[in-house]
Image (cartoon, rainbow, N blue to C red; front, side):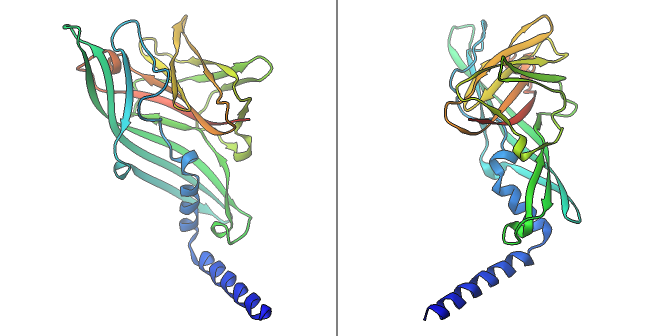
Length: 268
């Protein structure tokens, strides 16, 4: 009886393996991308965030509200070359920016601005593991993500520096530079990290988003400076450096325009 049971289990395993191997490389790679959707497809956090940034003038606070997920549009440009592959992932995310401000009658009102943000990042794969796991493919190297409203963007980032004495001293000059999946920046939980953004834009705003917290950068002498707190709970997170034009937040008749970088990191 045990022999028959073992034979049946082996038959199920073989049939399932054959089913996986019948998938094309493109099908396996797309499935693998969806498995890592939080790392590869996520854009800015939406909804009201803790520690919402306030300015000395109106507006009082703001937040993005993403449209229904059915409205998101993803395109994946795959290039397979033997046992390696490159995917350029492009996601289009519509939504509404809600800006609360005080009008001339001293009433608090909400201004709604429609937006459509585009996220672009790249990922490479190698085929060197078990066929039962996405046909043998695995994620090898990834990039950070660039997020913009239109091209060319009205805001810019030349580079970003992450610094904490004895913890990290890293300058990021290219958001589309590749790094290994195992080389994601690791930061001590609860640590306060200093951030400096180098940008030619002097009239807009920059914000930092991480783990549903947001704070505004201070601009002085050509630099945007701020901090963010690494979450206490260990795990994978992403941090976004979010630039907005002055008119996006400060003018009722100006269209939404934003540009940002997003990086994965680990709290440990």
